[in-house]
Length: 195
Image (cartoon, rainbow, N blue to C red):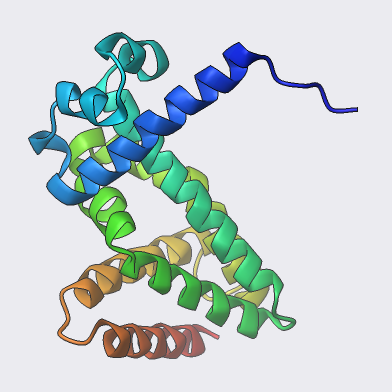
């Protein structure tokens, strides 16, 4: 039987949700460095103490927003891949889902553009790999096998770098939907070459 949450637990959840929502909106619209902690708490209807209690400040809030977007992306990619039967179809669907996610303005701005600035390169890569790295490695292992022509982790790094750059290029394209399809075709051609 599920335990009923206390009023305090509901308050904690709603406080965190209000801060995450404000953070996501402000970081996506204006970027990490242009937003003050005061603006964030005012938009959430809370005090600065709430921000520091739940996230230890603006940096911690940014990291929580970043991780929330990455966790949602990983779940969406995993679900898209699970809906396909063959390793090739799973890989193609996972790549398509990733490129669609990268087309989302909030994801693009917060994860791809602001993430390395706000978190620093090392932390950005660590969090990004925590959420998406294993999905890519597992997908490539299923598609290429363990005895491919190149080490699996190195292959995964090359594809992840290519996917990230393609995602950034898509966002700047005049026709993002067409650019996404072209990027998908290119990645499929690269995979075919390896296979």
